[in-house]
Image 1: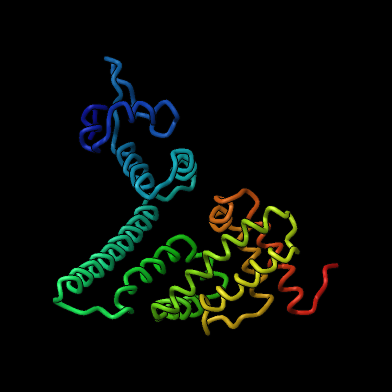
Image 2: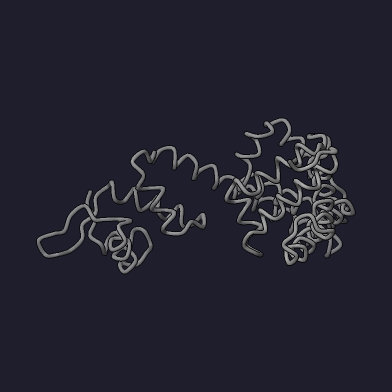
Length: 262
């Protein structure tokens, strides 16, 4: 089946202007141009447009989308399966939030009394799911499924007070790290305090799943720089912050293990 640009725009729910733009940047070329000069799209182009719109919905930029869908080894079936998994995860996330809101409404109207743990349950599960979606693959490859599952279980079982302490530590790390970065010295007292706070935050995050060791801590610091998504989390505040934290962690862990720089 073939589609004119107008018919495809109505079917896909996007403007003809957008389709023309995709053509101009080489993202979605029409199958052919009719004798009247109109763009005509075939089934292959429609499938490609579906992939483009899926990735846009997931927050990818057009340059990133083009790099993905136009790769010679792009597997459309695998991409659809991955899209499905992400959509299921998003549906589950929304279901948790809806349940939490319903319980909160019941609590506010006196129909039910929520425990502190219940109040935070939805938000903690949301946090775990977001971390899984963003970093799950890399973390599981590095530490294994069992370790990650146990760490997630630890997070979900945190009390209100424990969760607030964990969140406070995370905020302290970010603030202390930004202050330390101004010194440009990862060995400074402030930078080492940021590394210490990070160690404390890490032991709560890992729980008993990963016994804390200086080597494991340093390895995570390396991942913050090696993986673009981890790096972007810190560098969004200040370019170079991820590398600065890694270096501060390395100095901190070397001191803990009695090592010195060579």
